Length: 70
Image (cartoon, rainbow, N blue to C red):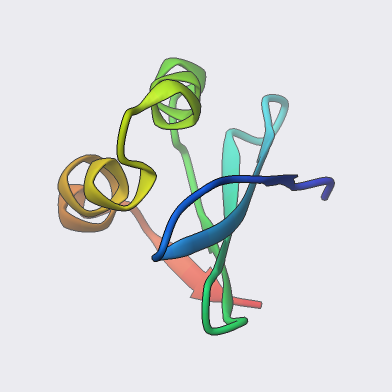
């Protein structure tokens, strides 16, 4: 999956596949996680958030999406 770099102390890059509704996040430490059944509007909001890391914590990590480490 293609990921776009983001300016964040927490996240390094973010990608999204609208067909499978899969969000892929590379963290600053190098770990990559995939989050499943994520609505596309949530991905778009993440990409335009003033703080990507804060948005991720509030709206994705704490939202209970199923995920796996890649």
